[in-house]
Length: 314
Length: 261
Image (cartoon, rainbow over all chains, first blue to last red):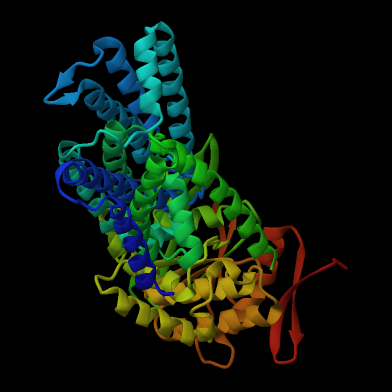
C-alpha cells in the first residue's frame, strides 16, 4: 500500500470517530454539533501536532526516544497549571481557566530556556536533549514542592489535569488551538528539506548547506508553540508523539518527505480513535484519553521494539 | 591556477592543547592535495575548520578569495562537499531519497533532486542500490553511497577524510579511480589519508601532474612535496618515526615502511 492509500485509510478512521453520533434531531443534534464535533476536531488537532512534533524532534535529535515532552514543554506546562490552580483556583481569564494561560506560559518559558541552549554555538544536539531532561526534572521538582503546600482540592484538580482530557472542549478551545497548531505545523514542515538533510547527521547537513542552528531554533520553537498550546488546553497526552512517528516509519520507511506529513495525519487519526475508545470503554463514564493513549501506546511500543529486533536479526 | 581554498596562519586551541599551530595551506581550483600524518596530527581538525564545523582560535580561512564566515551556508556548500570518516545514517531511508537530500543547496523541486541523485548513483556504478534502505548497506556500500552524495551535492571541491577506510583493497582502488575521474572533470580534492600509495591511483594511466602531499605533525605543516618525489621517503620516515623506502612493483613505485638495515 502506498502513502496515499495509507493516508486515505487513516482519514477514514478519523471520520469514523464521528460516526456513532450522527445527529437525529433534538438532543442528539445538540450533542453531535456542540460536543462531538469540536471534541473530534480538538482530538485531531492535538494528535496531529503531537505526532508531527514527535517526528520532527526524533529527526532533529537523531534519537528514536525523543518526544514532544523532551524539551520540558509538558513539565513547564504542568508547573504553570499547578501554580495557577494553587494561587488562583478556578479563576477565569477571557473566558478560559487561568490554568490554561499559565500552562501555556510555563510551556513556552521552559522551552525557551532549552532553545536558548540549543542556539548556543558549541552545544551539540545531545547536550540539548540532556538540558531538556534536566529542566523537565527541575520543573517536576518545583511542581512537587508546590503540590505539597497546596490544599486538597487544588492537588486533586492538578492530578486530573495531568491525566489529559478532551472532554469539555467547545469551539472556543478549537478556535484558540487551530491557528497555533497550523502555524506550528507550517513552520516545522517548511524545514522539511533541511530535516531530510539532517538525517545524514548535523555535521554532514552543515556541509550540505543547512544552517543547522537556525533550523534547530525554528523547529524547536515551532514545536514548543504547538505542543505548549495542546498541553495547556488538554493537559499532557502521553505517547502520541512517541508512537505515531514509529508507526509511520515501520509502515512506510523514514524518508522525511513521507514521515513528517504522515506523522501529522496519523497522529490526528490516532488520537481521534483513542478518544472514541475512552468514551465507550466503560459504561456510563469516560476515561481520560491520556490513559487510553498510554494503554494502547505502551504495548505498541513494546511490540515495535521486538519487531525491530527481529528485523535487525534477519 | 586560482586559489579555491586557503588557510592562513590557522590555529586551534582546545582545553589548553594546541591542535593546529599557524597552518598555511592552499588548494587551487581543480588541484588534488593529500594531507598525511600520524593520528592526532590535526588533519581532521584542519578539515573541520575549513568546512566551518569548528571555529579556529586564530588565522583566516578563505574560499575563492572571500572569508569563510562571509559565505552563506548554501554558498559554502557550492564550494566544499565533505566525506566524513564514518558516515552513519541509522534509519530506513531509501538511498536515492538520502542522496536527494544532499542537494539542499539547490533551489529545485524534489523530483529534480531525485533525478540528479539517481545520476550520481549510476555514475558511481551503484544504481542498483537506489531503492535500498541506507541502514541495510554494508560499510563499503555506505562509503560509495556517501561518495555519490558528494557528487549529488556537486561542489567545486571534495574534502575527504579517509575515503578508503573500511574498504577492501579492490574497493579502495575503485574509490580512488572514481575520485580521479572527478579530479579530471575539474573538481579539487583535499584528501586526508594514511595510505599515500593509493594516491598513485589518481594519476594511473594519465598524464596528470602528481597530487601535492602535505605532511602534518603536532598541528604543524611538516613538509610539502609532489607525490613521487624521491625525498618523500625521508619525509614520511621522519613523520611517522618509521623507515620508508621506495619499492618498485611492476611499473609502479610504492612507498613502504621497512625495517632498518
